[in-house]
Amino acid sequence: MSMRNAFNPYLLALDCPACGGTCDLSQPRNVCPTCGKPLVARYDLVRIKAEVPRDSLGRFGTDLWRYRAVLPFAADFPAVRLGEGGTPLLPLARLGDSAGVAELWMKAEAGNPTASFKARGLVMAVNGALAFGARGIALPSAGNAGSAAAAYAAAAGLPCRVAVPEDTPEAFILEQQAFGAEVRLVKGTIADAGKLIAEWCKAPDWWNVATFKEPFRLEGKKTLGYEIAEQLGWTLPDVILYPTGGGTGLVGMWRAFLEMQELGWLPKAIPLPRLVSVQVAGCAPIVRAFDAGESSAQPWVDAHTVASGLRVPSPFADALILRAVRETHGTAVAVSEADMLDAMREIAQLEGTFVCPEGGATLAALKQLRASGEVRANERVVIYDTGSGLKYLDAWRQALARRVPQDASA
Ligand SMILES: Cc1ncc(COP(=O)(O)O)c(C=O)c1O
Ligand SMILES: [Zn+2]
Image (cartoon, rainbow, N blue to C red; front, side, top):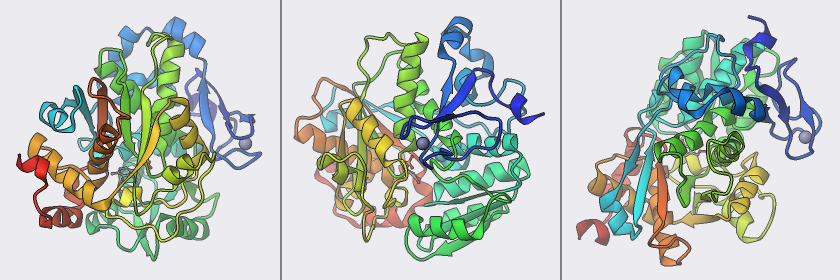
């Protein structure tokens, strides 16, 4: 299949929100050729609206490919698939009572291939690599992204290189090696891993699939927004709390809600959910920039937290994340490590889900926003469990070593 035929005919161009530039898909595209910032796909939403009724989505199944009208690949492109997306939105009655909100839901992402939401983005990036004719993929990772990339690369028959911080939980490293990836451990954070990848995996032999360094991970993460809307009967929650590292899911949901309004799949007048960027006190570059009224974030020095997915000191799409939060009238919140660990345990004990630390952070943030009144008792709220707790046994050891939190023992 030629490169041109691989792509969705509704996909018009890749735009650069930073400089207003635009480019086509006549050659492999990673970042904006003019300014080097992230590219965002643009579809012919007018035509999709006329030709793809919301009721026909089931034609493509129950996983995230049901939204393929707004995904990058043509219907007959032989996409590598492992059953990604289509995860449950769980109603949390007991936790809702404890947190003091009328309606609390959790988007539970551990059922994805390699047990995290990273599958949504990496399935698109690896298929993008195939469509662009790349010979191998490479990325820095905090753990989950590397595992997802390695799995899809194995299924696609592409070599994969991953660089991870040396204190990344072993489950991730073994899993990536099991899929045949070459893994290098790096002193420092994902930022240092990114520097190694730049040196070790040069174009054109290696296609860099790091967060926002290619346009399609965002497209996959966008399906989180489509799923939440569809699972709530084509309505939207009032507030969504998203654990933010590189921010793909947050920016992706924002885009999904705007696209669905254009498509007529949601009423235009309906207010968008207030998007809350959740970070931890040990690494909160977005929260600091939000509080200071800045439109970009400065790198966080000495980043530390057991929530490895949140240890991202300088998110590449900082400007887009801040825009998504501000334009939806959301906010950005840093939680303490202790509150995050207690929240993990509370979710497990009240709702039977063995969450990852990043998931715990979203409940801890909700509690802060209830205490400050920024989230009200009568609101409909979505928190996230972005991946399985089974790969974070050190974090769980720490959580269980703490005194039983008051709320959970009640
Ligand atoms: C479990 C988990 N939650 C959240 C995140 C942050 O996601 P994003 O980079 O989309 O902000 C990560 C990233 O590694 C993660 O692994
Ligand atoms: Zn640009």
